[in-house]
Image (tube, rainbow, N blue to C red; front, side):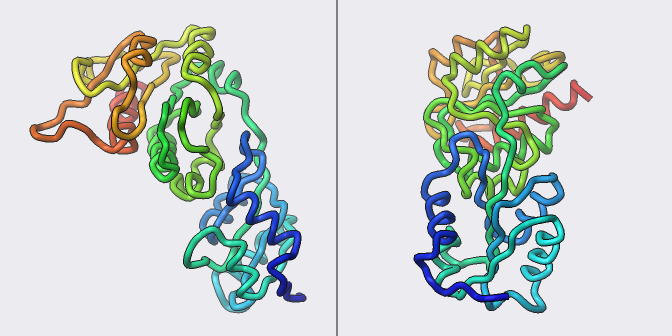
Length: 264
């Protein structure tokens, strides 16, 4: 297989542009590393391009994944180290990257799911935290994610990596206002439960049955008072002093599993 040396190659530029500006609706996802590419294949996604560093084309995990991707129908290209370094978004390149194609999901598809349990993320600005939150949600059985407000893109390479592949499988819609997300749930007779730092009900005393959405806020301030007022119920995680708050992904996981105990 010929080795591409130029950092100015159009494929190199395509990867760099997607790393800098993720696709708004997640139709194209930048994947870094063998694990995520395997996850994408298992999820049935198609590939636009798979790129392998020349130093990894024989006897490595990356080589095996590249062969599997080629059998999967992907275009596989080999790049010299300097060119590959320009394509990989991480400081220590993994040796294989890809652009996968994903079917964009409309918020309406998520909201109308029968007995759906939807996670609504508001102003979660750190892409790693957002990815971890989505990962915890998938593990706990949510049916979809609505990403709102000033949140990071769930389709950025950092968020996809933070989700460890959950974004490849779960229905995720982004770019909504919180009002639009809440209205979408309400139009399908769903209930909204908002996570607040104090004065909410214990997670086990909230009803999590039926079509319901869990509303969680971002780092620092969490949900605004105006956002909390949009909810039908408020939930607060009991914490021993002097702890007053938790990472959004940790808090989301606790609440999702509290819901899971009732829903399964």
